[in-house]
Image (tube, rainbow, N blue to C red; front, side, top):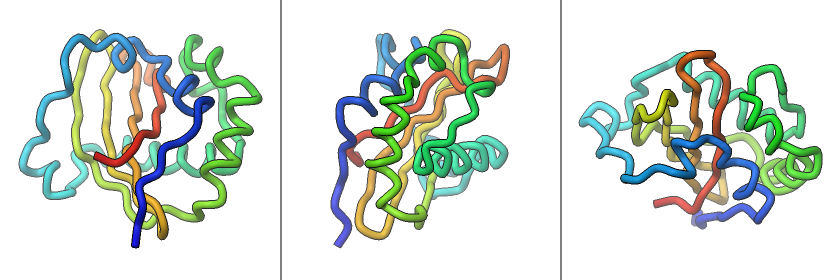
Length: 142
């Protein structure tokens, strides 16, 4: 039986550096029918999100892919905490896009992320002008 998982304070703190995630005045819009059925609407972003899940599990991030604000939030302690919390979960068994929204120059993708013994939501935000990662967040599955 899968159980929801909520990552600790370090994950919540560092992984919400994007203004569109932290200061959003309204909830993300409902997903389209294609997204609700689990069909990825942006395969390249999904591949990048998968890569970053693995990077965070291993504690080997690529700072050149982060916005300045996100880079500052991803301290070595935060990276170590993420690796210690995500690494033991093993390889993801499923990643399904639930929502996509654009706000304040950032495109926010919300995925349902499953592991063998845990499920969570994963928010992956990309700054539109640079393509850099503006936010990463793991939360309890909704």
